[in-house]
Image (tube, rainbow over all chains, first blue to last red; front, side, top):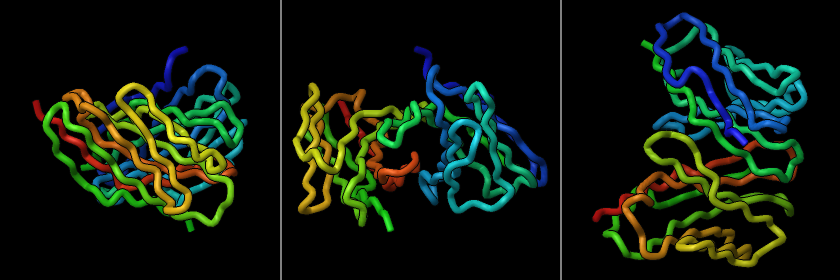
Length: 113
Length: 114
């Protein structure tokens, strides 16, 4: 099976803009989670989607949002970008039960200027 | 609250040395899951192992081995006869029995020199 794919791989935006990141899970996986990785804060959980419903949300401002489509693909949106949003955004997918292992994509590196 | 601590920020060894990466966790849950992931310079997190809280058996996979001890809340990872290709950042992570949220440690950057 193909792994988790994320597009784009690299992105440069300016403050105030918005951005949309995309994640395609492993075939058959119904759950998608998003994580932000920065040098200062490390890896932090953003949110999780299962069957098009947000199941869990991390401690991030409302500028961070997401959604999941019927084919399990997910998008993450960040509005009104700030310099501190510069990070590696990782998407992970799992089959769906709470015991399943999460498999990660290559990430999208977002730079905010 | 759940927490994962990887006290070693950076480790540098010479090829063929054995190296142990430490991981200590905190949780009030009785059922939980522990993971190790490897992050090479490319950025992708590569899954290495998962351990359930009710299974304290240690595991060996090739040059990798894991020591899970509930009594000390530790889940340490040992690489035997390290190789240059083992150079990466290694993350320990914790998950409870609900949902998919992983709590990560800060990571240990391993550098294996030839």
